[in-house]
Image 1: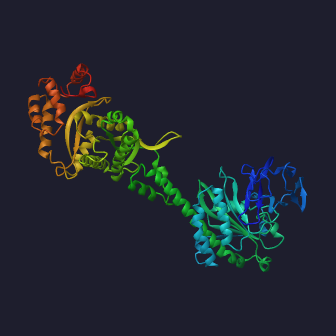
Image 2: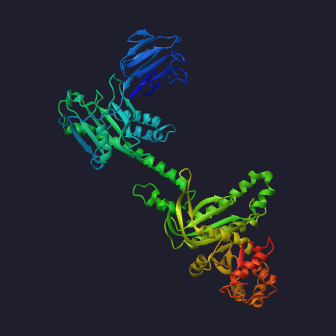
Image 3: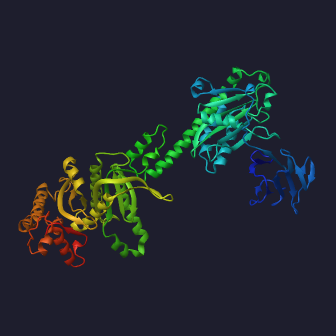
Amino acid sequence: MYELIAQGPEPRQRLKMRLDSGRGYLIGRATDADVPVPWERFLSSAHIDLEINAEGMRLRARAGSQNPVFVDGEPRTNCRVAMGEQWVVGSTRFWVIEVGLDSTPGNQRQLQELTFTRQQLQQVRIADADRRMDVLARLPAVIGSVGEAGERDARLVNLLLTGIPQADVVAVIDEGADSQRLKLGAWERRLETAGAFRPSGRLVEDALHRDEGTLLHLWSSEEQRSAVYTQAPEADWAYCTPVGKRDGRRWGLYVAGRLPSETVSGVNRAVANRLQSDVKFTELVASIINSVIRTGSLEANVAVLRQFLSPPVVAALERSSDEGTLDIALLEPCECNVTVLFCDLRGFSQRAEEQAHNLRGLLERVSGALEIMTSNVTAFGGVTGDFLGDATLGFWGWPFPSEEAPLNACRSALAIRATFDMLRADPSHPLHDFEVGVGIAHGRAVAGKIGTQDRMTVSVFGPVVNLASRLEGLTRQLRVPILLDEQTAGIVRERLSETEGRTRRLARLLPYGVETPLTVSELLPPESEFPQLTSQHLRQYEEGLDQFIAGNWDAAHASLHAMPAADRAPDFLMLRIAQSHRRSTQLGRDHPHARQVTLHRRQATPAGELTDRLVEMAA
């Protein structure tokens, strides 16, 4: 692998670019050139063709380029140049060097290897504190800068050169895509030399995979400087400090330099001590970088998950990991007991037709309604699944099981109802004419990350979801805001305080598309918040329901007729009684022919009647 370096008269006028063997590159001032050098005014838009192959490197000045290319002080139009040899156009110098990691085993007798753990470095005093504090102060801006990773790494190595005066070269090295090979990233030398840059692959690999802190290699003589562990010709020592992982791959900082002339002849612990301050500073930089990257990754994940998960769930996910990052494995799909809440806007289709001329305004209103639903789901520890048009799906009991799941789902539903009731009292509010229906069901389901490779979301799957949706649909026919299935209602009656909410059995039904009949119950606010229906009223309705199921329709009619006029729930049973002229078939709900009779009645019911989507199980 090769790298072209272009250096203008000013330090900021610098370019480094990786080159591949076997292809040509156009060097010019134009931005569409392969190697654009915009600061050099003596460079033509398309000036030099550079070609690298097995035979070497060749330069060709293009016809029409006005200014010469100087090699060894002589103008040339077509010539070969050696690796590392410089050529000049105007005031800009160009040269190409060979770069890459060296993996050739070194002579172990010539090498001293030392490891610095973080515990060992705690007592080391950082020298040149003022300079290094300035570097640390600039570090977060470099790490968080916008741009490609290569650009950030280039700024990082230059910053480290400033903070480590003894270093002659700094590089970023990480694992390749297959986690088996190492990849040389951005690097920089303090003083340019003609030689190749080939840092030790073995040093880096050992440092990254041992995970024991910084690993240092030392050489002790001019002869040993040619050892293959560190191929930069000016290096007597090199160390690699692991940073952590980014994009799932280990990476580290490689630092190399020369020893003072008086210490070259003898490698000992005193030499290592001279480098301890540099190593500790590099460890500190690595720790800051790792923290920033992990925090950024955590915040990115949290930003996504907060759309679905409640704050307590996100906090629990953070606590579940020893490294302070989200343990995403906990989000994998699993079968569990969940309570599902399905909330839908009523009359949305008609409203959409009426406001076809202002769909954007309608969308803003619907978004506001959905925000009320989702915020009340997450506020009570729930997880929000997909938005289904004008409906919201919420569920409890995942990723951590909870006995409070059914109760929290009901608390959420009551909060949603209370919010929309409050908005209806304000005619000036854009959502004052919105009404919602809520269905809640409890049972087994698969919850977690569900979807395809192209699109993944957090959701829940199973019959309990369909049941919650059916119950929400039944709220229109039964004319109540919130319906519960039998399991949820049983838990609420046993464990939810009447100061939070109440229930009443409404009917025994066979929802359309469901094979098993069930008793559905209404969830109501506490009597203190909804005095229109007292506890006595609820008992009176349930007495009427029991009479209806038993076939005593005259008694059922009397009980239901005595309910407050504002209560719409009795309308459903009263309509059935009126349609049959108060004559019951006297078939109990468990009679073997009961379903056949009700199916016959359903078939005979005119289209559009309320029984289109349900059948009462008692005639």
